[in-house]
Amino acid sequence: MDVRQGQGVRGNGSVTRRLRDDNALAVLHHVWDLPVGPDGTEPGVTGSDLMAATGLSRATVHDVCDELIERGWLRELPNERAAGGYTKGRPARRYGFDVHAGAVVGVDAGQHRIAARVADLRGRMLGETSRTVDHDLSTPVAERLEVVARTVEEVVRAAGAPTVLAVALGVPAPVGAGGRTEFSGNPYWELMNPGLVAHLQDRFGWRVLADNDANLAALAEGWIGSGRGVRNQVTLLAGERIGAGIVDDGRLLRGARGGVGEMRYLDLVSGVGSADGLGKVLRDLAHRAGGSGVAEEVVAAAAAGEELAGSLVEAAGERLTRVVVTLASLFDPERVVVAGGVAGAVGLVEVVNTELPRFLDLPRPLVVASTLGRDVVVLGALRRALDEVRAQALSIALR
Image 1 (cartoon, rainbow, N blue to C red):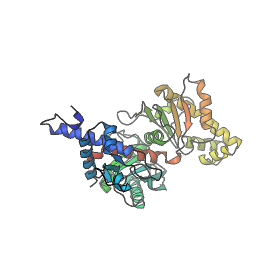
Image 2: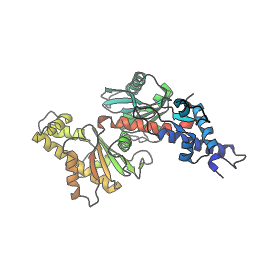
Image 3: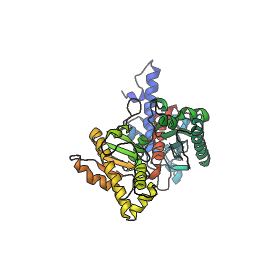
Image 4: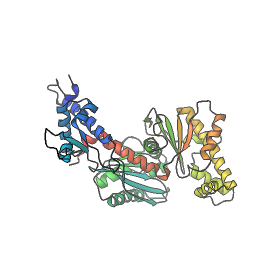
């Protein structure tokens, strides 16, 4: 008996529906994952192809495809015989993924920058925007809610107003169930995530998710960055503050209330002393050395070979080494990806890899710099939104 076809199931509609949904998702995900052509065209797949890929019968495959066409996820393509001018014999039905069925939005709702992108269902960018903000504890909650919502609204309009299937937000705060920050008593966290999910859902009626920004950075690195193919990796998002997205055996760790990866314990670590990120550390070091205190200027000067700037980057690297050691001792990752605006500072990760043998035995994690730049959180948010759409595809009404 092929249970995937629901054969032998009688009098239990819920079981039959679940099996049918499993079959539909197997077909949809296979078609969704097919590589597009060099010119970006969607590939076609026949019933026989789907039978071989999923193990389903021909009747089940075509039945499921008809349902997915009706739902709006697939399109029926011209058969190859008709396209080639052949008319003899029964032509094979061909199906393709409808990449234009909807779009997703990724947002980096940071303290100093709100950035957003719209992408199609294969993650290809349709539009982007960003704005500089200065949200501190004196900023009214209503102002933060409004500027995030306005940024999202603008980027969707700039992308041609596609049907939005999911929005994912990255915030510099722990995020628990329902997109809320459940920890209380931290005014900064409360300002960074003041009910953003509920506000956007009420305003636009879209499916909205929120996650910690370092978690989303880790998703981006595993998707298209320096953590791709690595089952155990830590992404350190080290801007003004430092946070960690921790992937263990391919699974992002979150904890009971979304607090995994928060680095407040660094206050207690000798040689570190705070959860300040690389941007703030370099700025403070530059100030003490009599410089302008702009982290990006320090990085540029170090790249140009300026000796003092190079020594500041080295000092920041020595501090970062101790952060990496704590994470390596707790989670034993294969790789640590340093992400953020100044993560690519010349010599930074080299200092860390050189210093690690003082603290860790072999095998040690390899420390690398992210190649995704300042948009790492936005990219991770897009990945999170795409994952949500894939998982909930059959509950999403396209038509």
